[in-house]
Image (tube, rainbow, N blue to C red; front, side):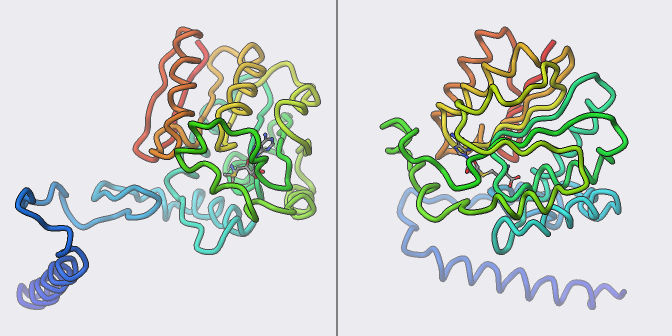
Amino acid sequence: MSFLKKTIPYSVRSLYNKVNWFKNHFTEINKFSELKSTHYNGPVTYDTDGLTTSNNCDFISEPRFAKAYKAAAGTKPWLGFTLQWRVYVVCWLADYVKNLGGDYVECGVNTGAYSRAIVDYINFNSLGKRFYLLDTFEGFPEWQISEAEYAAGIAMYGGDHYKDVYRRVVETFAGFPVEIIKGIVPDILVKCYSDSIAFLSIDMNAVAPEIAAAEFFWPKLVSGGVMVLDDYGFPRHINQKLAFDNFATQKGVNILCLPTGQGVLFKE
Ligand SMILES: C[S@@+](CC[C@H](N)C(=O)[O-])C[C@H]1O[C@@H](n2cnc3c(N)ncnc32)[C@H](O)[C@@H]1O
């Protein structure tokens, strides 16, 4: 491609983006505003789910991941589901611990997008393990949130969110060694009979059930096993971060905070 063929569309797009940005933001500009140069190292490669980067994300089109992600999206958690990097992280971690003894658990399942991606990505049927999926499958119990969480905006997960998905989840996981445990965490934790866990995903959007699940499963997590916290780094979920920082201190481990917002702990 000639130099001009490359640069003209680039310059036009770049100018258009700048004018468009100014049009949308000029009311926010004040005497303290600064003009800063971009920190990107090339074209933006990922720009969704609170994360924008120019870094490599070829994983999105790797056939193994693309197939698993398609299966996740097929559960239709919501319109326009675009969480590739978070799904990639859970798939990668699930793969990393698959040769350890121990089952898999997800607390906070909704339509089962993460778990559906995982069973595909690591060929779960071949592992001789069980995958326990715990959820109300009828939505977020709003009464479980504290005043601080209410003030932070966590009540937005109530109402019509995550409703009536039980039948769909049963259909999605037919043919997989999956146990679907319906009810409210912490009440249903004792119905998860496995005493050896290699992978635990916690994604219930609220402190009380998440800490209860973490405390319940931590002694069952095998050495080298992983716990992944979906909401750890999200500003609205600051109370979960504070609670898990305290949890990690008590257990003598550190949480890896990822740019996706996820938090990761390994049991030593
Ligand atoms: C963000 S969604 C989970 C998304 C899921 N990880 C995925 O792969 O798409 C949060 C889920 O947590 C569930 N939940 C919240 N609090 C709960 C509780 N105390 N007991 C059981 N499920 C709960 C909600 O019903 C909802 O389905």
